Length: 71
Image 1 (cartoon, rainbow, N blue to C red):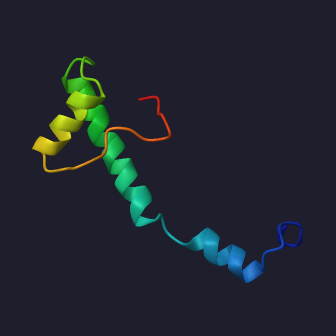
Image 2 (image 1 turned 45 degrees about the vertical axis):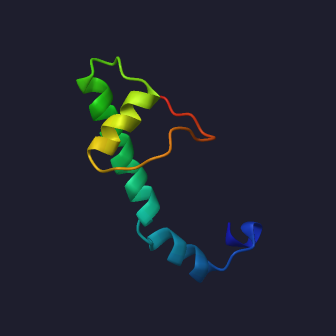
């Protein structure tokens, strides 16, 4: 497979064995917070209110993104 993808075996194994990135960990935590806030609001909060609730917790985030997720 490494030959087909034109990557070295050592590079593949290094990629495979590295841990989750800091950004990926932060995104998982953010998604967990969003779900918690949404559930606590009896699923009535939208993007704006969730962003405001996160800000009250000291977490600044942007309201929109190019990707939309299903929560």
